[in-house]
Length: 302
Image 1: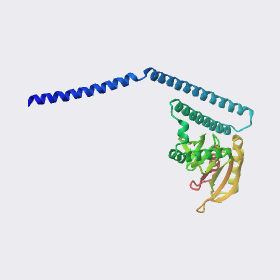
Image 2: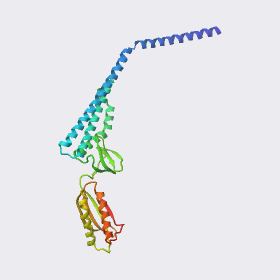
Image 3: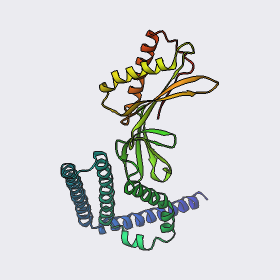
Image 4: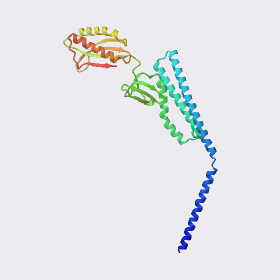
């Protein structure tokens, strides 16, 4: 019995050894048949091709952006165009060039790696439909951005309000418009989300000042003092484009009567001018015995 067991074990061990030996021989023959020279040559040639293509596109990117920069710099001097308009078109042109170079670079990389890009693009089927649906937002961004530029709705440096975001236009790109908020926040707004643009830089701005009346004083005396202040301060503020104009007395609500003055200024200067004139109005009126109620005061820069 023990002898049979020993013989059976020896047979199994022999079979296992033969199978292992056979598999080892197959693996050895497979490894021996590999053309390592061809593989190493292919890896080296592919790596060199990738490096050369990358270097080429880096040079094309640098040269292209340099040409664009020089072209727009020349445009600033030769043509009579607004600087913010030039900056807007310059920013958009750089973005278009950047995405174009990136597309062809990826195409070249995939081609070198042996990926049949043309076949994939031609026969993608469901993938093409999915990509098309996903690209709808991108196409909408580009078209909306193009119309914003063509209609000159905004330009780099303009003070704007888009929805709940207020600030200056930092950049206009293919997909997004960047608005730098007054608190320093850089907001990226997809162009397709822009429906209403309030551009605060295209027209003169109005500084509206309302000063409460002293019921114990004559309105004519108050107007005379305000007129004197206007004549005194206006030469100091070249950003004033019209006024100051005394519009007269108005009911500001709840029976409170105020004297209203309107001053039109260049964009961005309205708040400083408004503050300076109001401060001087109050100083002169109080020095002449006027008691100005504080609650009816209303400042509105529009």
